[in-house]
Image (cartoon, rainbow, N blue to C red):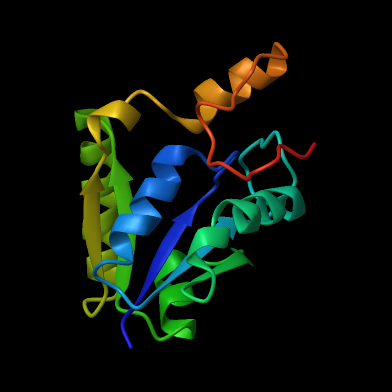
Length: 155
């Protein structure tokens, strides 16, 4: 069974993230969505527990093929823990690619048996990012067009 790890903060999970999961499931038997816990340097709008709950709601259509967990370790160590040789990442822009490529090369150096697979965003999702969704939420705007159907925002 080929398992891929999809690491990230997912603060919050968007339709772009969900699209990456669905596309990855055409290649991999299972995708583990690994969200970073609360004790990181990143300031998040949502707690790790809230992010996990929202992601689980979002991936209901993929039940049985997707696992959602919190992690607080290096991604390559997490991959080893779950016997995965693949990290999946979504790429929206050239800036994303440059950053993700550097991370992929560092991960390859740390663990040569783990590869990163990039999924370029679909054009209709290229402008959607968690920070835009957070900004809309902070001003009490409607984010339903930016998040997966069935996902409820939990503060």
